[in-house]
Structure formats: C-alpha cells, structure tokens
Image (tube, rainbow, N blue to C red; front, side):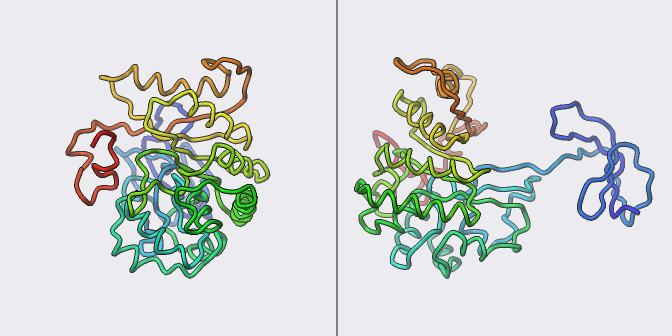
Length: 331
C-alpha cells in the first residue's frame, strides 16, 4: 500500500517535457509511481485542475539568521520552494569569534535590510565554527537548506578589525584558506564573496571582502577544488562587467574547478542589449572570447536574474532599505 497518491494533476516533472495528466504514488517519503496509479493508499489528494511539480530551489537567500527564529523559512514554502541556499554574497554568521559578532550583526542589518532588533534578539552566536552553526539548525527546518561560507565572515574571524579596508598578509590568506577548508569539510556548500560597490557595512565602509586582493579571492575559491560537490557565488559589481571582472570570475571558476553563480542580471526588454552584454562573461569563461591573450577555458559562469519591473517604489528607497541612497553612485 502507498502512503499517498496525488490523483489527476497536471504534472510538470522538471525535465522540460510538456505537462501531462498523471498520478503520483509516494511511499516512505519517495515517489515510487508516476502515471495511472491504481494501488491503494492511506491518503489520496485530488489534484484535478491543479499543477503538480517538484519543489522549487531558491539558490539566493539570506536566511542564515532568520532560520534561528523562523525554521519555516517563511515565505518560501508559500511559493512552492522546498530547497533554499543561504550564505550568499559573502555574508554569513559563521565562522565567528565573539569579538566580531557586533560588527557582523550591524553589517547584516545594513546590507540585507534586516531589522537589527531582530538580529540582536534572535541570533545567540552560541557557536564558533561553521560546523557548529550547522549543528545548531540541523533537523529543525521545514525545507532543505544549504549554506555557503561567506568571505566577509572568514576575514573577520582571521583579521578582526583589520578585515575592513586592509589587504591580508600571505599568512592571513593561508589561515583563511584553512578556515574555509574546515568549514567546507563540516558541510559548507561552497564559497561566496562580493566586491560590489553596493555592499557597505553598518558604519558605511566597504564590507571586508571588498578589501581583498585578486590573489586572495582566487586563492579562497581554489579551496573548493578539494571538496567535491561545492560551488561558488560572487557579486563583482553592478553590471555590465568590465574585462577585469570577467577575468576574475573565470579564474575563480578555474581555480576551484567549479561553476560560479554571479549576481545579478535584471532582464529588461527596454535594455535588452545591456543584458546580452552582461552575459558575455559566460561565453568568455568557457571559450576565451573577447579578451586578448586568452585562449581556451573550461570555466563555468552562470547568472542569477531578477525578472521584475523595477521602479523607485519597488526598490523601496528609504532610510531602512538594504541599498539606501548612499550606496547608489552619484547620490
């Protein structure tokens, strides 16, 4: 007997195939039958007139703190999302040393528009390593979740106050590589970073990752090579990207032997040429196009996009906005 049958829905299976009418049979938490399912079940759901599909994966979230007081990760499940990826843009709350917690709290409040009162009340910082943070939330969330290891958090852990505005010494880079490796071995999904001018800390200074040299960023990306299944996420700047941005992302991907997800593409029919220009970095990474003295590559770059119609109202510019007026060039 099946545990559950979902009957008569319009199935979109995630393969790209057209929708089809199909039943879904589930036993012990797994789909065991698709098609005309006649086997009896303890529970039957009538899905006639509804779409049945796998859960969506949201690869760019900042749930790292919210999961501590909202294990349902609202509102994601309300939109059919069953898997989330946090730790993007280099902003995580692990690894961490006690002296750096106030700074990271203020930084998150600024860059991601999180109420500082919620962060102060809801984040206990009763962990030090990335693995201890994952242990803190293991088995408590309503969705599947993976978390990248953030560059700014790593820098604070190793450099403390010097993380802001200063290049790291070779010894500090080596220590950061070790900390990242330990974090990935403990379950970190990959490495994330940002050099975007839109990312400033609670005091209005560039976040720690923005002070990193090119060599530091590539060296940290390279740690992922030794950890199968990991990935990279990076925000170089506001698109379109320069040749230097494209070359950096390509070298990160090559050093790690991993795909790199870059942010952020905003498709807009009124500015289609802008979007296509930004996407050229993906072709370059895989073929060596566009830049002189570069040849065949096997780097893999992929964009995250926001398919919205933006306006001054939808950005919600206000003193509490994550990207406030002081982060916009020329303001």
